[in-house]
Length: 167
Image (cartoon, rainbow, N blue to C red):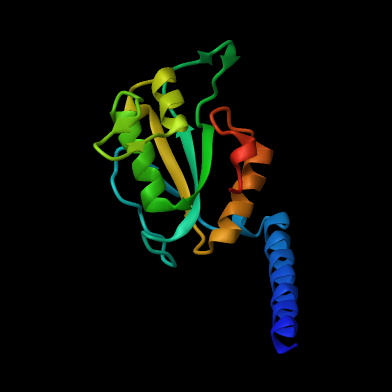
């Protein structure tokens, strides 16, 4: 009986934690935090005062080049084309690696590294100087995923799949 009670208590705590996290996201709690701008080819992750390079967070991929139209739609300066979440150092590096591989999947002997965002970016403008990241170290995976989902719903970046947000 004690195990069942412990499980019920853990479920209550988890439900409350999820409500607290969603409330922070709904209130725009993280909008007030600092977004760190980083050149596309700059390796690693610029650290915020409160974070570290292995921290979970949210990133935006932003265009600053001269393309004014893509696939029949207007392109705006500093338009967000992608939003993602996860361990920032790993996510940003994968985007860079696939982009620098001419937007193609990287094949190795035992695995493949792919990034749909990079493929779409490269197809639109293959000059890495025309792209940059803006990221925010949050530290908590669950909060990062919730924030990613909210940002995708609000900003609707063309190269992100909304059904993948928060996963």
